[in-house]
Image: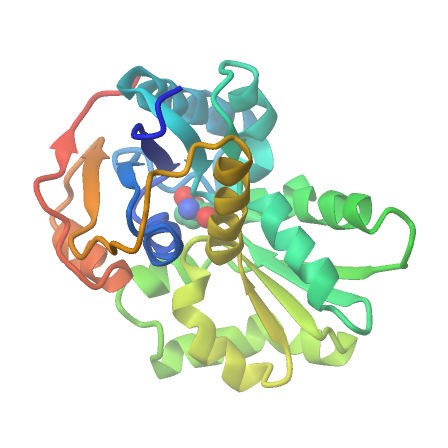
Length: 273
Ligand code: DGL
């Protein structure tokens, strides 16, 4: 495989841009394809079979473009469709669940870990299983999970630090204070934008950003394969990203600006089926 091939990321919509942002921080010289399935978002309240079907279609599109790594930049798709996507390709795949679970296991001192995500992610129990698997019985972890479905629309309305969001966050998160969790997995692409709000409610809790830890994992995976782009000391100032979407809704440019600090240029509209 050619190390100059792009890294392909896909998400149910624009939330995965929070993951892309982390990749640009850790791997600024790579080329990227970002696919947002904006016509069919959200995945977080869809059935398992639908999330699997959609995720396979997204991955197939990236494979057809020729990529050296696929990142499932969506917690819901990672929780439900990782194995299904792996079954259709030999291209290495990174999801959100394993890197964030590993970080939680390492960060947690008292063994009490909280996980928040969409309804589909939480009911899949993917984080619980992975945390317990990684702990390997060496330490008993107490895991508390909570679906926080209102967080996605609130972030998309630009309400990340609004009083309404703070009040809903208190409602969703106060149990974690009683459970004394010292580590909280932000198991959804939109939640890193709520770090400040969450931090006000859980000030002494480690917040695990799944995008950040998946980017760190990507460095390891590509380095092991000898597939990191040749770097030297040069740092790319203008990110090399091709954006693909299945729809360009009215709020698209406004929304992408919330997730990235720069404008998404010329997104190409594609049809997946
Ligand atoms: N990207 C999704 C996730 O990380 C959130 C939006 C959706 O429900 O599709 O779970």
